[in-house]
Length: 321
Image (tube, rainbow, N blue to C red; front, side, top):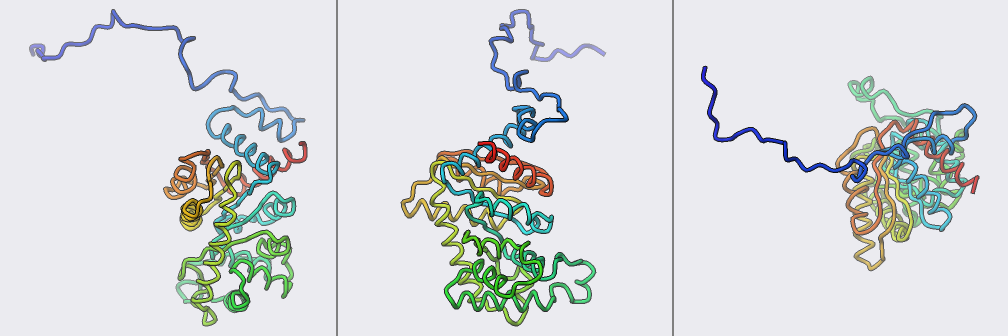
């Protein structure tokens, strides 16, 4: 078969213009490489030995941002999905609360349920598949009655939803109350806001549920949360850990509200930590709020590893300062 006579001819490279690699800007250099681990090193020295590349560099930068925020007296806000609580991490978060390293907490409605059940019964997270078929899913008596009772009473007294449940837990003093984020935050006078979507939580179909009280309490919490967000300007930090939808949406609206009311909000740090990269946290936490000044980080990994590692790194940096 005859050779094709294409209208295009292969390029000739004899006259290629090249330059020295030493003149070129490169994204990876030996000075940024990891160091071999040593058996006797501290956590901070271990982190220093990680490469200053990609997620390792971002993790170290986030630790530095949080410790700087603490030194400057700027808010360090933790937004959390309920799965973080189910991973057994309340003791870690409580230690940071006790050490003054969390200025405010924001959780969703499911977070209230798991936190309450842990404080009341020392266990949580039912087998949905096993209970759903029989219509038993979400029907725990104490969970439905006591949480709704706390909301109804507390909101009637002028409290937000987070305050209402935290106050109730301290009043009834269940066996495992020391493991509760809600009770600890209330005791320490740390704002803990609860952001609810009606119909997403098992307590909403119990007869004690009052939609007006739930909505009113959650709206009060949104206004409280927005007040803390207004102080992020100039070095504060917002973390979204494990919430794919609710907390990122709430944070974005709080940022818009704060700026609309005339509060300066720039030069702060945000971070999203989750198993996988979701759209809303990437946009509403990491990218959009910091577009006019600041820095956002996306760190992927299991909460039960990443959150204790972050907490340990922060505490060691603070203690060594």
